[in-house]
Image (cartoon, rainbow, N blue to C red):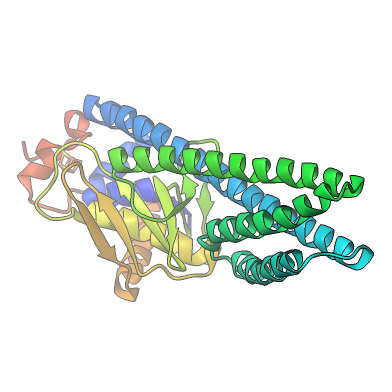
Length: 325
Ligand code: SF4
């Protein structure tokens, strides 16, 4: 069995003859060229979102490192002082409080490392508060004139400034990504695949004989969701050919990521339509692939519908010998 792209299967699902003609003459009409330009514009915005969100994660990690660093500096410093010199009751009190916050921060770090990104910010808050307590304790020692205390305090302050700056950039990148997301109406979730011809490779099925490039794929709630953007007029319901194309992307995700998506989304200019990925749909695509194989071998097929509107909006209308209009 040959391998067919999602674009091939879309054409075939629109009209068998359209697909066969496209193999011989694949010139694009105005609507297709315009559609590509709109796609490139959306991809550019998606690229910006992806980049800003990746940067935000990087700064979030820096926040985590800096906050933990500040807290360790403060606590270790206080502990050293507490065993080397006689300290006041208030310093003991500050040490105990900063130790409690340190434990809370360590727990948050554990959750953060397990993948809960929201705990990163909480870590910073805990880290900063603990550092403040720790620094207060160290300041007391500075007043006693201990050089090591001064050095430790300076490092801790620099460390905290680093944490605050990382937090600022984290927020800046996040807000930037969020603003573009709202304007572009991107499906919620982390963008893990983007058809920008740069960051993501062509998806090639291992067990299914299909390939393709979804416009983008988001990862949300442990699920992958392929999204296909359609330009031009918004139909009342999703077109069969568009559904077929989206189902191919669902098959590719199932094949490559080993997680079966529940659904994919077709985004028309005026509405987004979720399409359930079912075994029945997958079998229909495999059936189409087998028919395409036979047609390719024989080199012969005919119009398989009586829908005058299909011919009206067909990209092969000018060269089609069986057109209805
Ligand atoms: S013009 Fe009509 S029959 Fe011809 S390829 Fe297009 S949809 Fe099919």
